Length: 89
Image 1 (tube, rainbow, N blue to C red):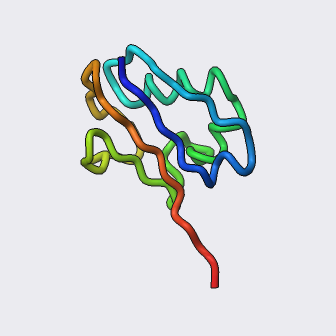
Image 2 (image 1 turned 180 degrees about the vertical axis):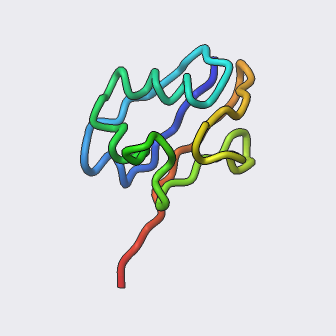
């Protein structure tokens, strides 16, 4: 099963679930995480369902290739990292 890992920055604002999911595509895996923690969606996706500009996702060490549809394929043993960029002055 694919494992989703959320950045610690998100954990400051809400309870971030450890997600192990059997999903063929990134969107399905994210939807499973959002089902467990609905508030997480607003931190990761914009109002149109695309990745927010300050969020990046890596799947097995490679950056996800599409930010709107999120249809990257997942393997059963994929490691998915969802990161928020740090900002400030």
